[in-house]
Image 1: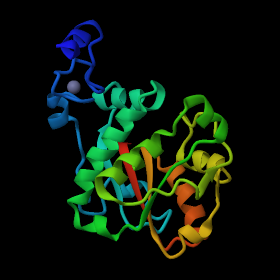
Image 2: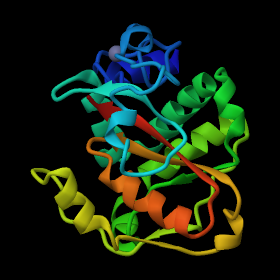
Image 3: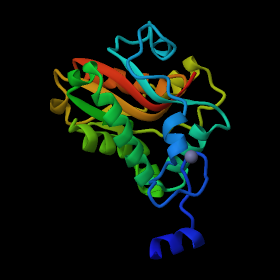
Length: 226
Ligand SMILES: [Zn+2]
C-alpha cells in the first residue's frame, strides 16, 4: 500500500525506457528486459567486437552485453549508471550480465576480473566507479573475484570523442599503472568496462596487465558501439 503510494508520487522509472515500473519490477521494465538489443555472448569469431582488437593485442575473447546506439534506450541506461548516481543500477546490470555469462562454457576459464579504474579525483567526485559496480554484480552472480587494487588510473584522459583509435591510444598509453602484480601473475584476467567504442581504453589497460604478468586477457563491455 505504502509502496504503491510512493510509486504514485515518486514513480520509479525503467532505467532504459523511463516508463514507470510496476511494483514487481526492479530497475528495468519487463519489456526492456526482453528486447534491449544484445549482440549475444561468445558469438563466433572473428566478429565486429573482436575486430576492434584484432592485430593490436593478443587477447582471448571479447564480449559485449548490450548493443550501444546514439539516442537509444541502451544509451539512456549507460547514462543513468555513469552520470546519474545509479551505482545500484550498475550492480543490477552486472548481476544480469553475470548470469548470462555463466551459461557459456568459456566463462569458466577466467580467473579474475579487473574493472577499468577512474583517477582518484574523478572517483571522489562521482562517489563510485561504474565499471567496479558491474564487476561487483558479476561477482555476486558468478563468484568470479573482482580485483580492484591492481590496475590504477594515473591520468584521466580528456574527452576522447572525435579522436581516432591511434590518437586515443596515444593519449592513453601512460594512463594506467599496475600495483600488487602478484595477484595477476599467470592468470586469465577479464577486463571490464561500461562502454566499448574504439577499444583504446581496453587496449591500454590490457597491455599493462600483460606486461605485469597476466597470462591471458579477455574483454567485457556492458555495451559496445558497432
Ligand atoms: Zn523499459
